[in-house]
Length: 355
Image: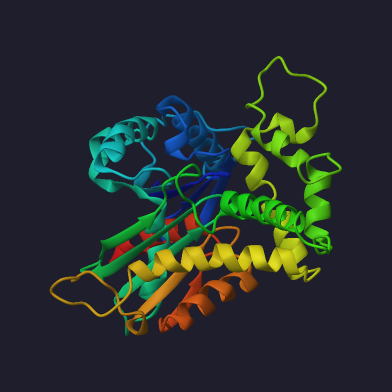
């Protein structure tokens, strides 16, 4: 059987989609996070194993009631494409490619295995528009990354990349940044009020953040954010303290989006204007007229911008990013949102193999 696999390996989940040779989706599977920057190789492969095994359940005859054992014998995949968050260098790609090939029984067919950063999966929509050859991809989920590509001779040539540095150093516009910025703005308003006659403005967002941290006052948030990561011996603690520190902040992102776009809370809207503005600034680094000094810039009027990720999946947030870019004079010819990057990649693999 000729099957084509695509895995979207991100900071929140691993999504595996399998297509047959006609491009029909025949299997899907999911597992936990697989951002390679935060995992050992063994933990990364374990997450991929679960997702692919589950996706294969509907690809065998008769369908299996349980996960399929990997590596498969005989080999099942005619091609595979892995878009991996946290794979940011040739060394990282070299480190994980043999392990993936072994897991899929593709050691003898490694040329059919594509391993790249997850931004590459979002480049596919440029092929929907034959009048352009350039695409800028924007991932805005738990983390964030921006990249630009040229579709050249059936392959995506990466032109430039900004971000993807992880929550300690970057991830502007992603979930961690949104949560951190929300807490920062709550703290700034509290501290500013200490020298003002009026108290801080009322805010639905502030009330919900206090509730999320099980505290009554703003300054109590600091201890809840900075408490060390949980140990296996901790018991009878509030839910937020069962999370690693970065998750305590990224888990606030849904509260910010709800307050901003459903309750029209001014503080929440300010937070998202700040975070969307910073991711727009990163996108802008890749844009402009190509010159001898900057030959790899992309003219947005001749390009697609392709968004992917849970945060930029919100139309209102995408519009904020696009409005920031427009104020800088950057307007794209086409705007796309890829809701299912793994399926897009698997279908592209299958269809491309027939051409």
